[in-house]
Image 1: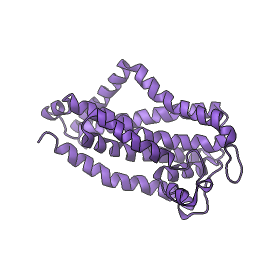
Image 2 (image 1 turned 90 degrees about the vertical axis):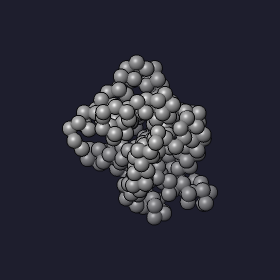
Image 3 (image 1 turned 45 degrees about the vertical axis):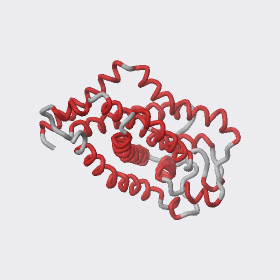
Image 4 (image 1 turned 120 degrees about the vertical axis):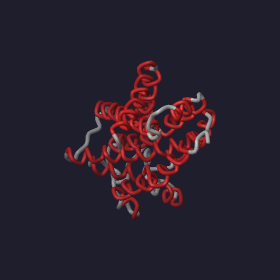
Length: 261
């Protein structure tokens, strides 16, 4: 990547940061939503939840919520892309003497910054609720890396779907699909407590792989299991996002290149 491309990409990132500064309430709501989910499931519903093999449900829930947040950020990416498309912002950028890749690179950097900030907030809330990691610092950093790796894969899926949808209204249709996929996992409950066919589907969810992997790395309950996918969760937590990136990054770049032709 050339110096000019880096400068243009940073300019696009600064544009997004300026939007944050002008819309602090929206940023606060985006950060607060996963916190509300965590608190609701931990204190309102957690009393009736059990972890197979024993253990504190909050120790199981908090890492799962980390993974869920990385996936639910897909909607924000889609909305930002569709809004820029409908306002003609991307067309104006494409007509300017700037690197063509700067818009997508800037969008991805901004999303990763937002995801890292959201994860930091959740980590703080989890610690305040009594959650702790029981492994070393290296394992904890690796768990954070796997979470951001999943987010990096999801943002390219979001960029592609945003351009494919074309209108902010279509984001709602995708939301209807994202929520079932998010809950069809081991984020809130172990797949061992689900009906056999449903547990078999949920355990292969990419989010389940990341959630199980980071539970293992944090030393909490719920890591591993009886299936091959659960026993090799760390491997799948690397391979699933890699597969998503291999598919959606090139098609997103190709779709962007074909806009307004």
